[in-house]
View (cartoon, rainbow, N blue to C red):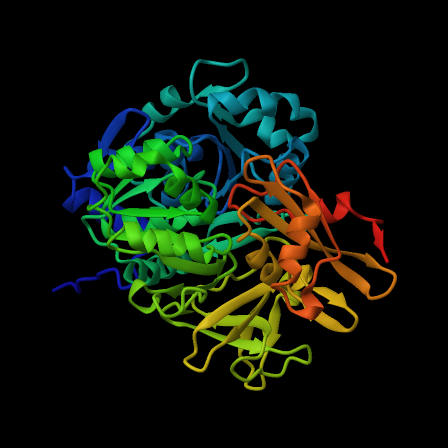
Length: 520
């Protein structure tokens, strides 16, 4: 009698294939005006995987995706996964030079675009690798020298390709937001992504009845949180083409949305929308906020409106996550909670010694979800590692935080954003939290500028809420509420605080603009 061999370590492609078998008739994807069952969605994944193989690509080869949200992008992301290829989804809002650099950095041998992005690629072809010129797929109407997506996909076999995928094989490369310089490719493996999804699904309360609405580009790791938790659980993924606060309120009710994964500025826009009083939101079971700090007044408003509250997630795409459960939030709204299941964190001082409770230092993390590397960047990968006395490797986050007596984490600021004034460490986020409370302030960013007296001094840049306000009055108001060392020397109005799509303030751009400014 032959021995029965069963998979002992099923990866995401295996799990999705099983959903296609056992949840065949259940909706898996609702996007672009169509609904696909799990059977149909897994067939589409297989067709994309087989289509990439038909273009001469082999397991481990990278494919760049420059696509707006829709069913095609979901099919391509997970189709590449099914075939053992490595997807590199690119942020469509960055500059052409950044797109070129990321495509070259990834070593992509093919690119898939939505129709609205194809001309952009055509205009930069002379700067791209030859492989891209010969392997271009585009949705929509046929374009010269492009393979039409639907015809190409539908011509392929719907059966799963015969490829063996190992746990340590690369699954995707997610490029960093670019707030601190040249974007780096963050690698995730098949096992790492699966474990990440398992741990997050438990923490964020996903199950097979989950109906997650994606409102951020599918290139974003914030969207990947809800997307993978939903698909791992056998739920239903719904995709919005773009963020629209009013439309989201309507969809929560009409589509019975159970989960959201968004950035703070999106929640702010939602709570400012009059639509919040017109539609029921009782279906919501899990709301996650990530990408930048969720200001306490907004967090409190979400708890007041939604029975499920909101789970604030602090994390890096590189592999550190903490979450604040709704049950723990009322007494500690400023905290970002405890480490994710299977993750550990420490706080280190400038000499890499562990800090006691209440003392701020750099956050480091270790666990099974930490990335294996920055793609092709050995030196950058080594710089991101701290090795403790037991030989354990920890990920350096570059973020400053502290733990309270109960172990809850509080974020202070980015290490690179810290201002050193008169020998004192000043954290801009603390100052911003005060200034935003002024009734005339709509948004604020604080950066360090040159001071003849102190070396550096804080400068506040403010976008007014209603177009009216006096800078001196706001500065004096803020300084009466700030500590002596935190007081701002200058406050200036700007039209808009620059942010990336994840809501993070682009302080690098602000520092460049105000470079050379000197205060007495």
